[in-house]
Length: 565
Image 1 (cartoon, helix red, strand yellow):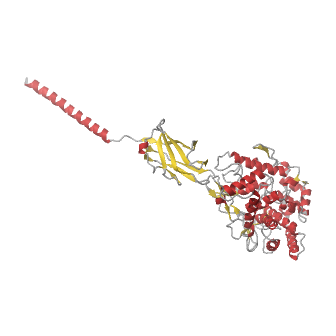
Image 2 (cartoon, helix red, strand yellow):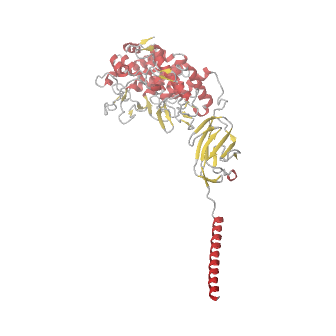
Image 3 (tube, helix red, strand yellow):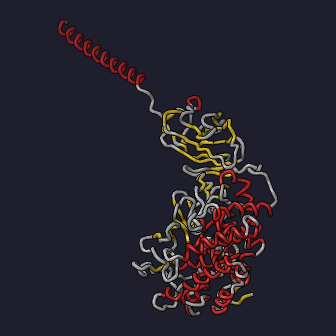
């Protein structure tokens, strides 16, 4: 019995020990279960809708009504609205954290937000931020940002005036760039509104025509214009002003007349810029040529000397049947850039053929410029057939620079009717912006115009094939002769809708991007000049009539095979 009792006792002790250990383990497990937090659900914003429209992260949505904004955020999993934290979801702008929020009765993954503040001013910008962090009952592990941009206010930012008065106002204000801001020593146009002594040959030529319009419109007197032109021609004629076989550099010092390099190998003559300069000077000559005063006679004589001294034939580089853009004494023909169509350079060939002293034959035009017809296009864009040039026509300045003086309605040749070419180009540019295939904010039938201009952080030749989201007022306003209704709509938009940001001391700033909320800081001579001139050509044909009556120009056009209407 004793031995049996010992065995039984050992078994009982083993069982008790095992039970005790099991109870201990269970107790420890329960304690661990109680003390270890439940892992947080990983959340991410899968989609965001602003006023019902889906907006991807990093994108912008424009044309929002001037009202509070509704936001619908759908997450990948259910959210707990009770643990919402406004420091993680907020707006930069007047809305900030001033909004209401709620869940969705039918979808637990959705958070609704409505701002208490309203978008209240034209193209006001807010940013919506969704940050990473622990809230909404989980851990949000993906951030999100988008930009909200208001539509334009219905009320104009300036008092409304008649369209005719508005055209005059734009011409007068823009004219001031060439009158008030001209270089004090030379009278030439500064390249841009912060360029100091750097003046531009081509932009000055455009400015000469703007000054003639200033006389015609009564912004200045004829005598004041005569005195300014005399200063300019005296400066250009001086031996200290550098010329390269009669051609002027792209840029020069307005104080000394020394060439300023445009690029490493472009430090000498620029034949295209010279053509733009001469286009303006020949218009001035026509305006004053019948004057009887000593000053007027001397001015025209000085212009004739400058005109006859340009060695257009030298720029054939050894007699080739093409004109070259650049030459300099130390770089020679290093730029090696042929002037070939279609682009802004038709005027260079017309003046080269028109020169009474250094003319070029028709073969240079046909083979060099027209490339024996290879500058033709003939394709259709936005329902419009384009006679010449690259796809969609390129930047709008192609239809402006050579046609400040040349009247495209009066000339045609075997390659094109030039009025038809420029009208088609402008219509395509307008239609592209109205269609807005890239979805930029603000683009519309009223807000249009792609051409070379400043852009955020740089400069680019804007066009439908190089669309950076930047509109340049000169593109549409200098197209007034070609698209009068569309250009007037653009003018009214620029002035009445965003004029408080765009309209300044010398007219409209160079460019703007409503997508980026950016407005250019500068004015550029080559963009301001065509606005004044082409609006006048639309209104009266004044500059076209002056330039086209020049006997040398008529001779050059005839020589090249143009039909003059």
